[in-house]
Amino acid sequence: MNFEEIKKQAMSNWEAMQNSGKARILIGTGTCGIAAGAEDILETLREELGKNSIEADIIQVGCIGLCYAEPLVEIVKPGMPGVFYGNLTPELMAEIVRDYLTADNPRPDLALGTRGEGTINGIPRLFDLPVLKPQVRIALRNCGNIDPTDIHHYIANGGYEGLSEVLRMKPQEVIDEVKKSGLRGRGGAGFPTGLKWQFCHDSPGTQKYIVCNADEGDPGAFMDRAVLEGDPHAVLEGMLIGAYAIGASEGYIYIRAEYPLAIQRLRTALEQMEKCGLLGDNIMGSSFSFHIKIKEGAGAFVCGEETALMASIEGNRGMPRSRPPFPAQSGLWGKPTNINNVETWADVSAILQKGSGWYASYGTEKSKGTKTFSLVGKVMRTGLIEVPMGIPMREIIYGIGGGIPDGKNFKAVQTGGPSGGCLSASFLDSPVDYESLASAGSIVGSGGMVVMDEDSCMVDVARYFLTFTQLESCGKCIQCRWGTKQMLDILEDIVSGRGRDGDIELLLELSEAVKNGSLCALGGTAPNPVLTTIRYFRDEYEAHISEKRCPALVCKALVSYYIDSEKCQGCGICARACPAEAIKGGKRMVHVIEQDKCTKCGTCLDVCPAKFSAVVKISGEPVVAPTEPVPVDSKA
Image 1 (spheres, helix red, strand yellow):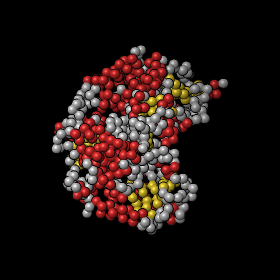
Image 2: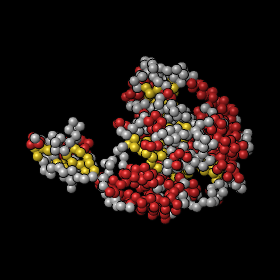
Image 3: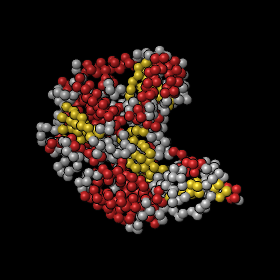
């Protein structure tokens, strides 16, 4: 069966499903959905459909990005728009089945929005909601819409049409199309994808390799995982297109073993591709042959760097090497190799389906297209987003993200993962693109975006991220191995109240040494959190060092707790809750915290009734407070 016949069958099956007369129920069973309880929702759904003798097609889909609202379910009744429900429990799922599928009540009180033609009972359109309206979904175009384990769903939605078109083109024409799109590598460096392909295409040799870098190791980042779980064929089609363009016959997907669901869905996708003649020898009846293997990584962060990744594939310890030669000249086993990350490959398949001009119409002059970000931290609506390059940071955090919880003030956002920079509120109206973030001292990186509020200590934040990169250093470069260790030791001293005059200047000096003396981007970018927190929040460093004070009341060594004798009513709740038994005082006695026993866990502050608010947390000079309990009635 040729591709046109496969496509015709896929379209027929898709239309039959759409017009079957049965309800379609899409349930998000990506990792985030499963973690939130999607499997229990699925079990309840099947039970309730059986109890009520309802015939419906249940389709398990990937993550649509609304992670804050998981578990998510979309119900599409015949001839009606789909209705999305979020934050479901098994009890709520049972109610919705009874109320909507049997009694035609869509439960507007539980619905997030609708998708499709028309609306129901005043429920807003899902893609008109602030969280989705500014988004443009290219890499995520099918996530949450199709069954990722059914290749026919992908094909029915335009899948492999780009590859079909490519096989009628010359390899150079394909590269030129990618160049015209303006696509830059979405793995972190932002190097022009078409130019990277050109280098590999022009390198001599009959054996060349294509690699998909799915070694996503940034804390708080899950873009690649979500794409592979929700639409693996978009990535695989992109790899096939790249292989044809540069003349590669073999490819690898390097993915960390911590992504079992993504690996499972990739294996299923590869099996289906082979059955359909879309992988292996003579693809689509052409002379083009390509084979893909999955290589599971052990989780070393440094293996996200190209040369370390290739060393790992070859069976060696994942350590970077000096360049040149670049992978395009001498990569896997010394052969020309092209490496792009998951999102880049997903964009490639869309570009060849819809054209370079379409893709280039999004973004800025130098940063074309869209970028996925994992929006996490102190923000109302956490999740996976995809936005045009150049969108203002404020629109991401306050528009899509819904702002900061509990009425707190925005303080900083870190972009680009643990090697990215921490940007202050002065950058809220700056565009998010490669050039703007680089000029501010940060990076786009793979797409991690961590939001922090007024309760975050920026010195402690720098210490946290440097702890990660220092541990993940492979140790090959002495500047990275020892420089990051020295920097971390200084930060530990500062947050512990042992900071000294000159520490800031020493951190700056060490940062430059680490950046300039490291072979790979891990060391080259590891100081970014330190450099940007000093640049934009230097006053916090100075308070820690000179005043032995943590303005955000985060650093344990610089904070203390005491009980306000004027407010304490002697209820005893704090004393009973204290795990260190550091609070003394009986019934109707003003309680006292014994500072030498206090572990500064904050439990007393958490449990003190709000109507009293007697427990106080401070930083800096100690408060003079009673050392022995006195009767509450004696306060007057």
